Length: 579
Image (cartoon, rainbow, N blue to C red; front, side, top):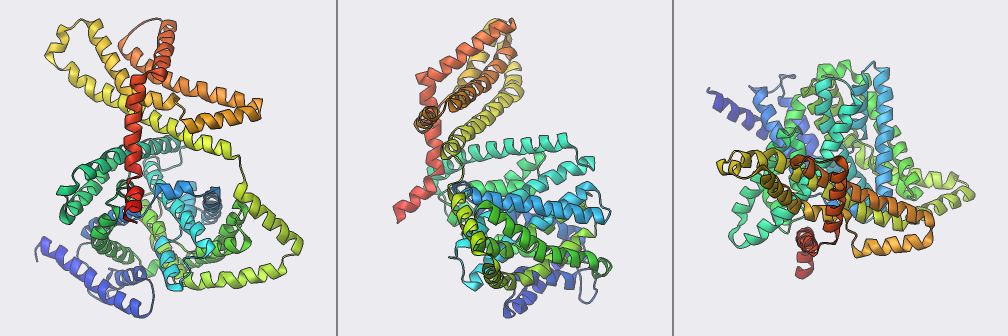
C-alpha cells in the first residue's frame, strides 16, 4: 500500500473507532471527549487488541492541526470585553487558585525528585480545569442560571489564558532546559507586546475588511478567509517564536469581536469537531497501560490532589476574593478536575523534551478519572455547604457575609478607572509606537536607502525628510500616550480635590507619560541627527509639547481611535439593531 493510502487507512481507523465508541458513550451519557480518548487507547499501538495505525508521525501532524482548530474555536468563543467587564473577584479567584496549585505541584514534583521546571509545569497542569466538561455538566444539570456559574466561567477563561502563556514559556524553557528568570521575563514582555499589537491591528483591519467586502462574501468565501487567517496567524506566531496554539487562539479572539463571528463559529464547527476528534484519539494512542501500571501511585496522587486539595484551594480562593460561602464551595468543587489543556501542555512539554515522557499518559489518566467524577462533585458541593453552614458559628458567618459585601465595593473606584482608561491607553500606544519604529528603521529605511535617486539629495535634507516623516507617522500614537480623554480629566479633577497625595501621583504619572513620548521622539532624532545631548533634549520636549496641542495630530488621532472603537463595538451595535 502506498504511503498516501497508509495515511487514509489511519484516518479511517481513527474516525470509525471514534464514531463507534462515542455512540456507546452517548448511550452511557458520558462526555464525547472521553469516548475519543478511549477509542485512541483501543486502537493505539500499546494494546494490540484491534488494528492499529501504521504511521504515528502522520497522526502527530493531524494532532497538531487538531490543537490549532481547538484553540481557534476557543478564541472564537472568547471575549476580551467579558473578561474586562467582570470585577476583581474572578481574577483573584483564578490567580490565587493557579498560584496555590502550582505550589502543590512543585511540592509533589520535589517529592518525586523532579527538576524545578518540571515541578512548576506539573502544578500548572493541575491548576487547569476543563471548560468543555464543565459546560457539558452545566447543560446536563440545567444549572446555568445559578450565581456561581458566571464566576466559574470567567475563572475558566483566565485559566485558558494562563495555559496559553505556559505553552509559550515551555518553548523558552526547552531552549535552556532550566528556568532563567531573565529569559522568562523577556518572553512575557515579548508575549504582551505581540498580543497587544496583533489585537489592536487585527481589530482595526479585519472588521473594516469584512464591512467593505460584505456584499461579496458568502458562506464559502467566509469559511476560506477564516481558515486562511487562522493558518496565516499560526505561521506568523511561529516566525516570531511562539506556538501554533497561541496564533490560532489570537486570531480566533480577534474574529470573535467581528459581526461575522457567529457565522464563522457555525461554518467552522464541523472542521473543529473533526480535527478535535483526531486530536483526542491521538491523545488516547499515547496512553501506555504498562506506564500507568508502573506509575499508578502518581496517578492516584494526582486524582486525590485534584478532587480534594484543588476543591479546597479553589473554594478558599473564591472566599478570599469576596464570594459568598455557597458560591465559593460550588465554584471550588466545579473546578476540581484536570482539564484537556493539561495534556495539551504535557504533549508540548514532552515533544520539546522539557517534561518526562511518562507524565503524558499519567496526566491523561488523571484527567479521565476526574472528568467522570465532575457531575457528582458538583452535586457534592451542596451537602458540603449545608454541613459547613450548620457548623459555622453565627458570629463567624456574619463576618463572612460582611466581608463578601465589602468585596463588591472593595478598592478605589477612581484609581481603578484611571488604570483602566489611562494605563491601558499608554501600553497600547507605546506598543504601536515601538512597532512603527521597528518597521521604519529595519524595513522601510533600508529599502529607501537602496534607491539610486536618494543619494542625489544632500544628507541633511534627506535626514530631515526622514525624521519629519517618521514623526508625522508616530504623532497620533504619541498623542494617545500623553492625551487624557474627558472622562480621565474629570477623574483627575475629582482625585485632586480629595487629597494632595493624589495630586503628586497624578503629576508624576503625567510626567512619566510625557517621558515615554519623549523617548520615542528622541529615538527618531538620534537616528538621523548628531547634536549635543542637551540640544536634543530641548528639541524633544518642544516636539512633544507641539504634538500634545496640535490640532492636526488631534484629528488624526481621533480618526484612528474612532475607527478602532467602531470596529470593536460593531458586534454589539449590530445585535442592538437586530433586536
